[in-house]
Image (cartoon, rainbow, N blue to C red; front, side):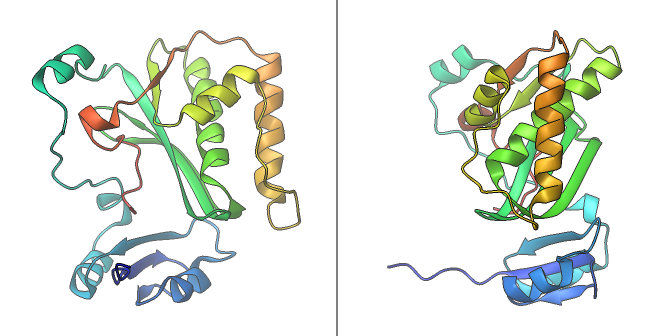
Length: 213
């Protein structure tokens, strides 16, 4: 059995900003802190250098990507449509602390962000990100398409239902309040936005990825 790699956690905004050597220590600093900003790094040195910088300079930064697909497969898939936005979610556990955001696919400029919430799941975050994106594009009368890497969230949007198995409780009430609003929005609004599956195997991580893998 392979040994789990050590990680270090930079907390830019939390109860006590700094670098922490365990997830539990990091979680203590971001729990119940509105707008907490944090990210994991493979070494303490990288985490400490990141602390001197800006949170938004580090999230979504992916490693050098090399596709395992053949030239023929890549040609068939093509390139991303940059007249688009991309959405993604991150959850530290299932359930765990969850947040989601939407960005411009080409520039990675953040367009909206919600969380972190004390308790949620990645699927719920992906669903909320899609509905938030639909409302955002409709509000701006935009013809852009929207990318997601979650087939589950796409299915929930089509069905206008959040089919999560997570049970409602006091901790996740803020998340389920958003879920109820999202479902209601889907049932009472029409939209023309095309939702497209992001081809991770061909293009790498989706631009809205939080870079915490």
